[in-house]
Amino acid sequence: MLGDESIPTNTLASRLRRLEDAGILRREKYLDHPERFAYELTSKGSALVPVLEALSEWGVVYLPDTRGLMPSQKPSEAGKAPDTNVAH
Image 1 (cartoon, helix red, strand yellow):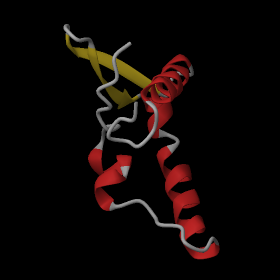
Image 2 (cartoon, rainbow, N blue to C red; image 1 turned 30 degrees about the vertical axis):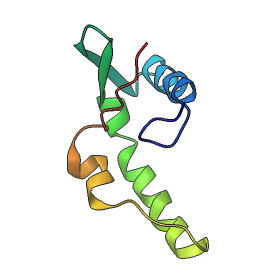
Image 3 (cartoon, rainbow, N blue to C red; image 1 turned 180 degrees about the vertical axis):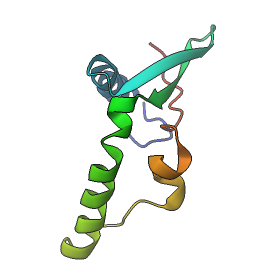
Image 4 (cartoon, helix red, strand yellow; image 1 turned 180 degrees about the horizontal axis):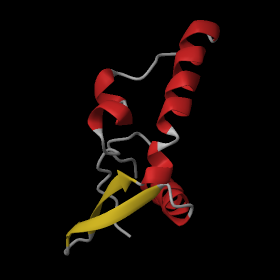
């Protein structure tokens, strides 16, 4: 099953868990049934934002058919990681 992110939900959940375990994201439950979580960058995750934005910009310049982040996708502008609505 694919979510709004066009990635299988089990893959997305696994990746989010790894980022949480690494201290890059923190999750907060916002719905009990079914369980739903919102994810937010930690200070450790926020420190990665300039690096990820630079990689995105590099890809646009040097890799054909690469699209950069839209302003609404840039965590530095939004302040939060996107809600993923993944049940755990």
